[in-house]
Length: 286
Image (tube, helix red, strand yellow):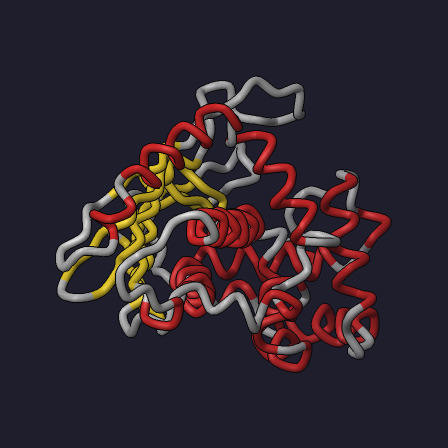
């Protein structure tokens, strides 16, 4: 199991992506024909110190993989929430509200119901989000979230915002004994997790800054022991920072987003990098 512990879920999300990025070659499975190139199973994020999602203050500064997280939340709401079933679950919980406020409250499960959709590239095997469960343990609340699978950078950021939204919806209708957002312990479990090298530059830009991206990427891939990170570096210099070489629209959007949010002259940096490590001998086919 790949397990990371964070002060809150946002911190755990950062540490999970860094753990993927830095794991050694013998760890995980490679799927060279897929965008989700590196895969681990199973995976857990645990908010060791409580502090819940840490999204109330961070929502405006979450890495802007989406133009608005509200739009992503609304899309997932349409994908996973059948209003009739959701209201039925809430009604059952409201009937048991006294039991949720007593000395030892009940645990309660909210299953996701994958709805039919015409969205492109949605898994035919069913949705990734499975359920979330409220659990009272050792005098405080825990939230257990279960996923079938997830891309851990862009999609997972959206899933975290979505589940946070749903928890607030439940809390607005039901009273919980001694609920404290800042002490909520979260277990976020995925049967399968994958990471895309095409979004790592954006992740690093928004969590570390452009100078650290330059420092991390300014290496000769042939001298990097970690094969996955060597692939990330090679892709960054040979494809990612060159909009004319990016053919997929979504990737092109990420490239333009990255170039528009940084102060580094990446063309000059590329020329220096290419001269110093002669990357033309090791570049992948474009």
